[in-house]
Structures are given as structure tokens and as C-alpha cells.
Length: 208
Image 1 (cartoon, helix red, strand yellow):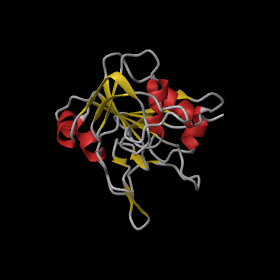
Image 2 (cartoon, rainbow, N blue to C red):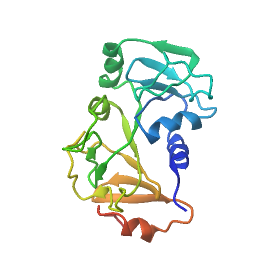
Image 3 (cartoon, helix red, strand yellow):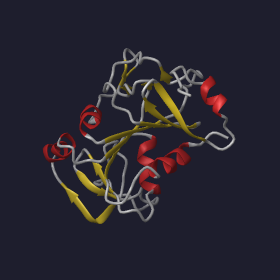
């Protein structure tokens, strides 16, 4: 069976290593905080928080503690708070090792579109454009196809870009793919999913 949202988030957490400073985007990426485990990872939120904990249990929410997606979160003993200027200085200055983001489309050359669908959805780019330009590694977590069953991994993005050639790895509900010279490379498949299914549901070029 394809991975569900939590399994995708858990797989994305495997990308993280001790000592990393990491930014989590809105949507599925926020769930990664629940799967960091014992790793020494510091999560950064562009609204001014360094050291985010997992989501709170029901009844223990603090409305003053939110992530960039306005979801309630928890703090750690080492949590630090700061203004947006300091937050984006970290991002633009290359201090964040990895960003895990959602996406509407990813092209075979690593182009990313994740902030608007003209005429339908304009949620604002938030910190995404700064993140993909400033962090050391970009990992995208998203469903492999849209609600109509159409591939979200394309030869070229049709939506306005967040960044050009910025994606390093893509984790979908079907598996894991890397952006390499000549297209996408299948790195891992979800349990019960075949490489052929990934190929059939991918419009981008998949390298052999």
C-alpha cells in the first residue's frame, strides 16, 4: 500500500542527522516533528522560533506557541525566540541545513512550484522562496498525484515557480526519488508499490 501522511513524514525524518538545523514547511512536513525521536535536531520556524517540539496533546495546547502554519506546537528547554529579521537572516545566511517542504508540482530538473494556483489558490509564498534559495538541502514531501490522479512530477512545472532547480529529494506516497542529471532517480519504493507503478504515475523522465 502507498504510504499515508504519517508514514511519509516518518520517512522524511530519516533524512535528518544529529546536529542539523531544519525548517519544516506547512502541511505534511509539519508532521516530521513527531518522528525526530532521539536525534539531536533543532527545528526552526520562520515566524521566529528555534527549537520546536512535537505537537501538543489535546488539552495541553498553548495558543501563543504556533508554527509558521499557525498550528499549536510545544517548546523545548533550549527553545529560543526572535523576530522575523533574525529568522530570515538565518535562512538567507545558509545557517539552516535542510528544508522539508510540500509541493504542488516538481519538475525533473528540480524546479519547485508550491505557493499558488493562479485564479484558484493564492496562499502566499511565506518563507518558501527564501528557504529554497538559502538552505543547504531541499526535501519535498507530497502526494505523487493530484486529486484527479494526474502526476505532480512533471517534465516542466505549469505553475509559478518557488525556485528553479532547487529540489534535491522527493518523498511521495509511492516512494523516494532524487533529482539527478537527466531526470529523476528512484531511490526507494513504498511497501507494496512497484517501480513500474511509480513510472506509470510520473510524467517526469525517470533515469535508468
